[in-house]
Image 1: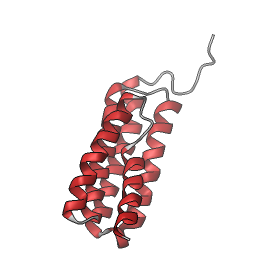
Image 2: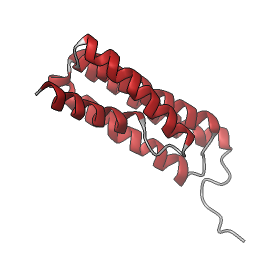
Image 3: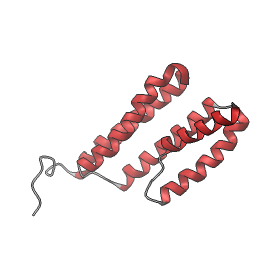
Image 4: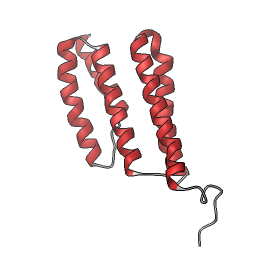
Length: 133
């Protein structure tokens, strides 16, 4: 028999609020970072990435992993990734990279989320920077 944890008496719906609120906060920090500008908004993006790690950790720790939470986190990652691409790159390059990023993210979703939206966008931004150098 499993050891009783302090949060086992809390309903799953309530426990799931914590990681979902962290995801929402991460999305809002990313939007703020993009609006302020990548050069000055990097602290917002750093907090957003930290919250992205914290939401998954809290969901697993609180045994509050839900399909909604997984979808919400993934869609937030995708939205942030595309915002960063369109903010950082010239329009033609962003359009090309955005299409490639969508394919990487869709493939990652099918293989147990090996690629998050933010992981993929950082790889694509590094590639774009290399192409423009």
